[in-house]
Amino acid sequence: MIRTFHVCKSYGARNALDDVSLHIKKGDFVIINGPSGAGKTTLLKLLYLGERATKGQILIDGANLQRINSKRLSYLRRKIGVVFQDFKLINTQTVFQNIALPLEVTGHDKKYIRKKVSHVLRMVGLENRINSYPLYLSGGEQQRIAIARAVVNDPMILLADEPTGNLDARSSRIVLNLLRQLHTRGTTVVVATHDKRPISKPNDRVIFLDKGRIKKD
Image (cartoon, rainbow, N blue to C red; front, side, top):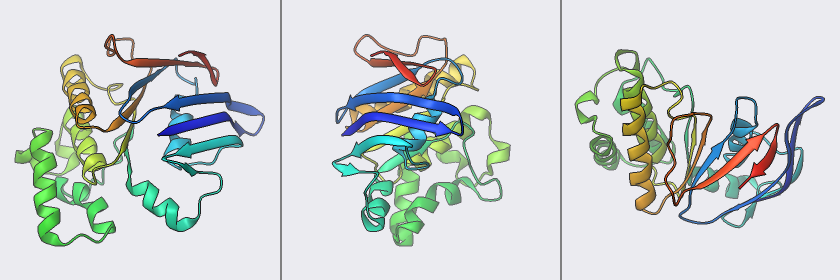
């Protein structure tokens, strides 16, 4: 599903990632752990095509991201859901409008959009917030809306950057339970976190990053 081969990412003289090679299989639940500045967010950016690697190769579902054409790139991006650390919700739009945006971009009709948005809102337990604006939601609620938006297109891969970093213990449990629920439905889930609280389970795969390198897998 996801393969990286000797990937490096540099910002000037600073190496954010250095010789990162890994293989994430379809249906895996992977936690990328490490201190702040370890390269976790940078790795996710490369996987969701937010940035390009300086060196190395990245393959997602068989597509080489260093060589992919614009048509295949557009299709692949629809299959990758991203939950950002700072949510990236549009504060001037309602919860419904925020979640509906990916479906509108891909050309779905209004009836389908209404049905799908209602479905993911029930999944995250916030159907009563459909007409609310993000600024009137708690941090935990905003994170759950961000997850709903990320999965409304039924992605094959879900990337979550510090999904519990700014949440209290209760909200963190709710968010993690949502991610695991999505995983049980077949979604490949990759969670980047420096959270010291125990979020992994015995069968989870945990990759430790430090100073841009994989220290333990």
